[in-house]
Structures are given as C-alpha cells and as structure tokens.
Length: 195
Image (cartoon, rainbow, N blue to C red; front, side, top):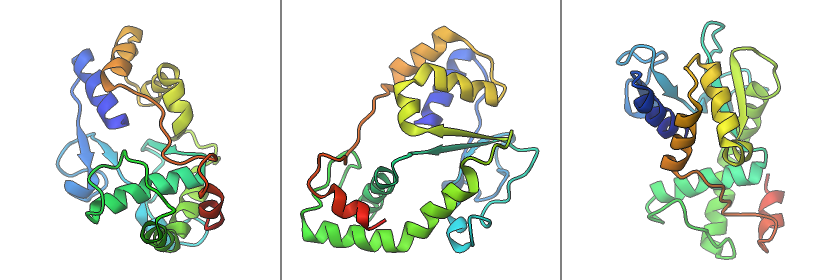
C-alpha cells in the first residue's frame, strides 16, 4: 500500500520516484539499479539473531519506515495468507480463511513455528527504540488516519507536502481497513495461543 501511495503521490507532484522491490530487483542495500530508491525489505534474517540484533544493519545516515500491526495475530495471519497464496492453495490474499478447516489450521501452525521468532525479533529491533532515522507506523492507525499519517511519512522522507494531493492519493488507492481475523472468530483464541 505505501509503495502505491508514494508512487501515485510522486506522480501527482511531478517528482521522480525510484523504487526497489528488493526481492525482485538487485537484492542489495542500497539498491544498485535505482539511485536513492525507496526500498522494501522485510529484514528476514533478523529471525536468525538473538534479541533482534541481526539482519539489516541500521545505518545512521539512512531512513527506515517500520510498518507493523500491533495485533500480532493479525500481522502473522495476513502474512500467512500471502504464504498460502504463494503455495498455490488460494488465488487471492483478500479472502477470509476458515481455520476450522484442519488442513488450513495445520498449515498455519507450521507457519507460526517457523516464523514466530522472526516476528518477535523484528519488533524488538525496530519498535520503541526512539531513533530519529526510524519512523514507526502502526497499520490500523495508518489506514484509519491516512492523511495525517501519510503526511508524517512524507515529512520524514523530506517530500514536499500538498494536502490536496494527499487526499487524492487516499481516494485513488482506495484505502480501507479490513481484518480477515478478529476476536469474533470462533478460532481466534486458539490461533492466538500459538503465538
């Protein structure tokens, strides 16, 4: 979502936009193909570390946007849907999975076993460190307060502000908050205990 918002906003502002989808580009930091590119990286190697110390080295002269969900189950479940899609079990990540299905539940349990340490370490590494070069943005707040939050992102990256274009970006990208799992689901507590 953020990449699409930044891309569209830059287009409206007539500012050059460079973006590196780390995994499908050069797999280097900084990007070797696009100078001064915004770069997406999940810092997967942090899961191999102790207490969130490994993975990407935080450079003082670089800026980092840490986008996260405060609800750990919703965070992991959203990424699990992407994993499930990539394995070919579903065609779209925007569907609600039924975790009463034993096959889906088993796959989710395996996913949590493999990735639980990553999620705990990524929070330890980036969240609440009070560093001036890391902007922490909670996903629900971002979506519910898009104009205000997107403006913070623009200011953080020294991008000129245009209120009208921010609102146009919100409308164009069609930003809305959707959770595919919440406390009302009969399996919510079961899944939450796995974390």
